[in-house]
Length: 410
Image (cartoon, rainbow, N blue to C red; front, side, top):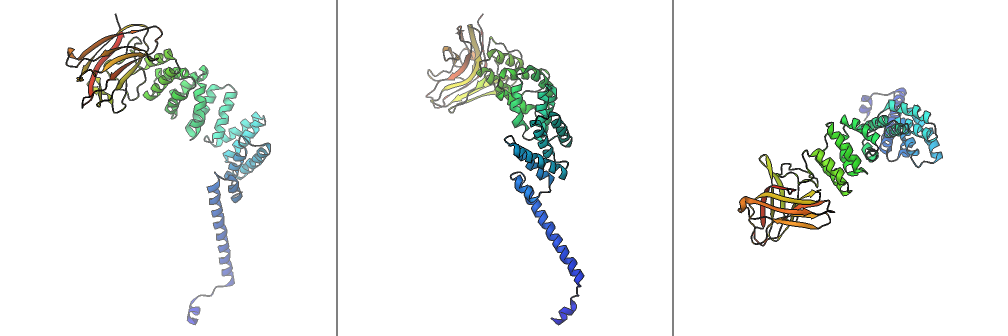
């Protein structure tokens, strides 16, 4: 042990003092680092605790000011929020939430000029603060500046994760105003990143589907794409609301050559992923298989139903004027046993059946079928449907249709 003591160098008092001081500094830095990390982990859920842990951090102080200046804040809480916001900006002049707090509270006090000055500073710092962007929208709306409001909408929707949740409902309601709808066409013509999401939203959520239809029609004319799903959803909304003329007008704009006096797509060329009620809609239910398939330049409707299962397998809504109509077409591979022949039926929307046209076996008459219907007055919406009757045959019923059209009788 004595030799060991001789080998170890002796340390002077000053050296030990330095080492102790360094240890204390390291402990202090470590404690501060832990406190700072803990403060940042709590800043979103508990800004009060985060501020206590890191009272000198301007960003955390700004978040606490934001919480205290919420919509339900009392005058005392707003005064405290203003005090914290000013402190935050002294601690960190780039603390945008603090500037937004001061701007909102100035606006609530009626100091619009002051609010504009403060928010101009906030916008200079960042384009991503949601409260700043929402105030800018409201300010533009209050001044009647439609173009300015839409510019702020665009910036907000480009930069905010939650902007669409807040703004799409407002914007889809606002398109009922012709001035806003006109300006929005110009904004969407640039195809911002949020355009398709808004179009899909408006198709199903616009309070007035006619406004959405007018907007979509104009967008299509200038080359802005409207998805098939959005068009189908909009047509459903228009028809459900009883706006048949508006629905047909929009449908005719997306299906060139469509004629309201007859059924559409006689050779199943469209084969749409999301058909509207005015298109051919295959119905696969209860074990029935029904689909439109490509067959060269045209298409073919294929169906099969297991034994003892029947029901509609294909449908298309009609908006035919009152009068006489003929149905004609061609089938393949239909050879039903007994009396279980598939048939076409035309029914009014209220359920009245206007007649049936049964299929002959495809081997008869070259597979052609024909029949007549009369649409009475007062039956303004009809459904042309292909119905399969239940069969006792082991293989059930199956077949194809490659052509069908309902047209005025001459």
